[in-house]
Image (cartoon, rainbow, N blue to C red; front, side, top):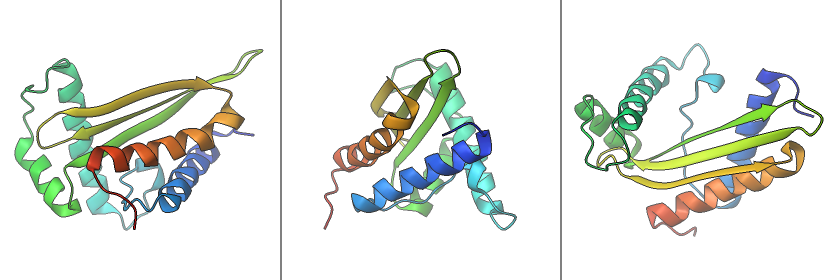
Length: 148
């Protein structure tokens, strides 16, 4: 039962982590819904990524789009040891037949290339665990890493 927005986010994050662990995906969450008072660096990193994503998406689907905070993004790639960042989320509708839309996008933030983009609509309770599993498997596929 996913009625409370903060609880929804916590459950979604927990499922993302669970499935990443199952697939042996190395990860670090930069998610404003999971920040604590000691996460100032991650808060700043999140702001840089949000700015990058906004500019990247506003420049169309061309992988050669010019994004202004390129130097800051390259530093994030070095800091986290990967050019691949995943942007993901859920949107639920409340109606007679509740539906949820799940989306994720794997981007190479250094080149601006969108490596993978996927959207699913499913019954919220049955679909979220499957969706988070798909996200973690997709990260492995895009990055070329295989679990050990």
